[in-house]
Image 1: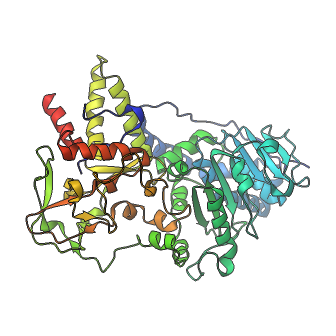
Image 2: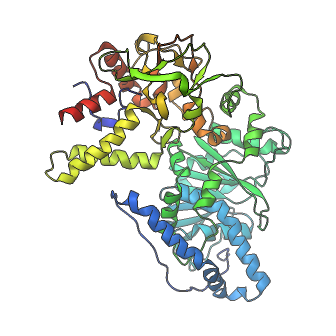
Length: 552
């Protein structure tokens, strides 16, 4: 798809011109820490191989390491007691580590006090993270006593009536409540006590099955009301994940992670290598975990049962979100074999286009058999690519040959993602999607002449206000909690287009590029870029890139 590249701040080029609650243990050796820091072009190449080698070594010595740890604990002489302690450690890993790994640098963490075992086990997992400088137990006077001689990072603060205040308690990066909630609670005070990228973790004390009613009904009444409260308070992204381990303290259970900022969604959806790097940077080698990157990837996508009960609610928002699930059997698909590629009719610099080899009736989808194979560049990779691109662009006058080589190589990737695809921020930070196959050559239909679009499309570059982004770009999705979206991310990004009128054999198929604007910050640049391209005064991204290559 050939269109004006999204603006990226000011760097974009213009194309037109009591005691510590857990038992004391003895130390078994030192703590080995791998510190991976700095931006390097080699990180993207070497990190995955290094992590695979390192985790392989850890896995091979897992059992012996775990045994050594428990042999070091004076209270673990009895085999049954050892097994109990180990199970408790595994139980609370599922509560603590997903949120801790999601936060980019958790330094100050609060654990809400309650039962001693729950508080102690939660705090122990928190303190495994070397980034933590202050671990605070919040609660009433009966359950906040701490012997910080055991770990100087621990402290306690009294919290009256479960109300956290910035004045009395300060700001936290992560707040964890291991106590199962029994009633819908106003979480606004916790929201106010979180930093802008803060994370709240709740223990729901329940498990969702396919037999359950909609959220907010029956035994899911409290959970549904809590979900509503979290959205109303201001959390921009809420995720529910379930751990169905049979040998644990909670039993099968689910947890809620509420992200204060939508940008944190990108961290929640970190890939396997990113999770491994954060684990090895923050947690000493002497600390063995049941929690690992495959476990985190499993938690990122809610189970089917959660999506099912979510979609039983027939409210307008949920109906729209649940409408993206699966193929619509009533929509007929036009296969790629009925299309051809040729010189576009949209102007001298419009490049290639796609044409109908047969008559196509109104209401048909096109190329669905290939659309699901689209290219996705996720936020972390997208960020690395753009950092390299801007670095090479800013240092283009450098006489070193490698600067030009980096710029040429990365420019090809940027040109591909911008010129043939579109950017979005549904995952919190910028990421790219490029249609696979012939559909990447679909040109923009100027002045409303497009014939492939969403059902409700009725705007064009000459009818919209460049200074007024549509409301659909002001939020990441319809609701903060949307398991239907989480389970169908790719479909949400590339599905929904149908022919809005009959298309004759030999006619060019044209898209509405305004639908490809995924961020409010890009709206003005995209609209003005399309206006310039339709007027013949500005080049599209692909035409610009190809002309630059010819002149080089």
